[in-house]
Image (cartoon, rainbow, N blue to C red):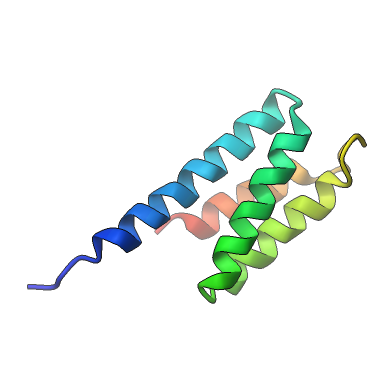
Length: 88
């Protein structure tokens, strides 16, 4: 019987929660919150060697652009890409 790393499961659950909050923020036009969550996701993934997740989250952050600016086109598609990457 395989042992389950409960801490790893909880960390991944937090990552999923951050992605949901990021998406909800973007839908509500709260782009600074979406940028913040994208950065958190990218940092989490980078620290754990999950380069595909890190690169996609960094791409979302780049597309959203700097604080106070309107986001660029394609952030929704990038968020969908991230969701597909994170889905087992």
